[in-house]
Image (tube, rainbow, N blue to C red):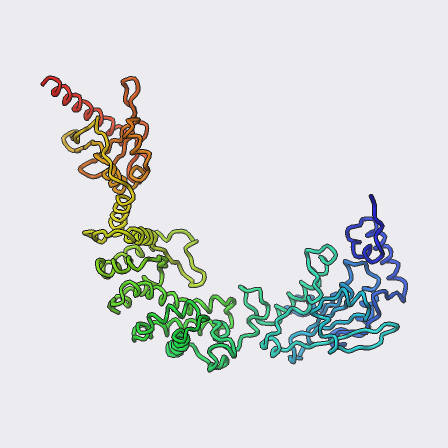
Length: 579
């Protein structure tokens, strides 16, 4: 089945047609040597002649009229001196035809600073054009120049985009208004070479940020408040002049007061950052923190005023650190509202590098407030921070928004999460010591006890602990767990899954295997799983602390000690039978 394409569609799809592409190139070559063919329209030059001479524009218009679809564009360039020995060709203007419309874009001539760039449209007043050209362009056509060009009536529009236009919000890439894109085969060359080249040239002419795709972001900046997105004119902090406003502790706190007032008025648009600051405003107002904030504000202002600063984030990092510290203090303040200010001052450097992501229940907050001394909490923070700094883990801990490494207290978060869950229906006694690993294991063990009933387990192999002394120096103790809670406590002590995996306890009850626990010098060390088959006992699994594998030396020592323990158990049974 075949379909004969209409003439317009045939032209539109020419880039897919290998035969027509060859014929089109031949026709283009033929037209280039024949004057007078203007199927796309003989438009008047759109670019100021001070940028591109009249004759060059006329030649370009004629060439584009004779070009097949992918080549309907012209790039105008000039040579500039990079240094005394080298020259470089740069784009000064572009002209192209796409989707029934002509578009030109150019830069002002050297010495003219009255505008950033100019652009122009020209299109025929025909049904095809009015159907094809985007609504964005057509909606303002009553403001365009309307004139007769040759035998056609045309709309024309010329605009010089100034810095004031861009600051006021005109950040559209007008040189791309016709929608040509590199992912369309028909406009790939146009988008890559003409539009991309014009944009690259513009970036070299105006200040830009390297870390944003918005080409006019830096040009729009009137002051530090614009970089930090502090104000939206007419909507929020309106008593601020972006051109003169300086960032310092006083102005930061005034800004916070403004947002706090909005919070008190139930303004739901107040950002999460300021809601956190509102909780600890009285802390940040202390002399220590005013000085601390002023230092970060000065870092921000220095980066802003430095002409060599290339990214927005370099400026924002000092500002972001203020909010990061405020958020961390607010997390602690929620739990210990009476925490002495001295702790926040002493541990400020630790707090700024730690991310406290925990979300805990009201019951957990109450429990911590009344049982965990805040001094113990800060002691944990200091130890965790020092350990993290020593490890300096991988680069993924680097926070780009702050400019340094940050660390999460994952064990503490896990502990608080478990504690929140347990305290929903139960009360647990506080631990005797507030060391993080012990606190975590204690809460985990209590949680396990609550969620798992205590069931007696058989002790056929070692009904009582068997102690073995090797070479008169090392004491080994072997025993079987009395019940599931003891098994759970053991799992917490050696940090393996034997305590939480219910199938271990089930298989012990069904006498499918033994679980033997081993201590060395009264410290939990090994977990052993054994099976009996045809009067032979074999080890099916043995693991050390945190499921670690045994070294060959440990295996040899264990084999010797366990063999002695079996001999002692055999002797116990013999004495029992003899009696």
